[in-house]
Amino acid sequence: MQYTLIIYGQKHMIYARDLSIAWSDKDEYWSWLPLRYDISSEKLVDAAVLEAVCWLDVNGKFDTRELTLETTYEVVYVVKLEDTASGWNIPVNLKLTLPDGKKRPQERSMCLKEHIGKRWIDISAGEFVTSPDNAGEISFSMYETKSCCWKRGLFVKCVEIRPKN
Image 1 (tube, one colour):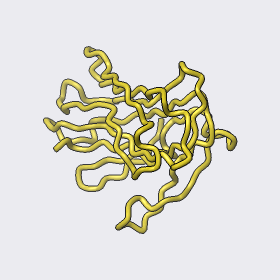
Image 2 (tube, rainbow, N blue to C red):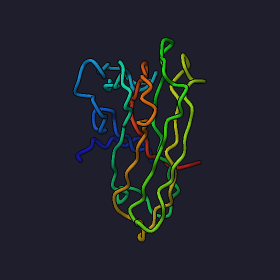
Image 3 (cartoon, rainbow, N blue to C red):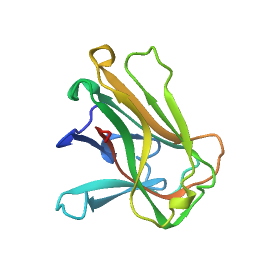
Image 4 (cartoon, rainbow, N blue to C red):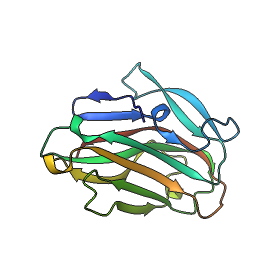
């Protein structure tokens, strides 16, 4: 997978267009909206806007050799749920798989319902410490594919890989 790597200081961003989003090529399921990356920026990025799906799967990959060694990083999805969002009673699953293959993937679930109509939020997929032993490609995903519950109103701006403070 090719990805756009934008670096702001120590923060690396993979924008929504460079993530693998199931059904994003179908207008009835996802659309694209140019947004300012943040309030202080004139830079526009395309956010993926969920129109309606019952199979949510947003994933990506990143080569950790781009990062500073011996640093703890976190992988976060930057998302927002519009006021009219629905179908978020079922938690989404988040998964981070490290390149060393020795450890089990980090997995967690999070209910997004409480974030409907609020500002952009960061959803952590996990964290890791860079070292020569685990250098290579990580993969991360946000998904909910078992409930068959239709979801609407999610904006996905990017995934950030950033040092954890």
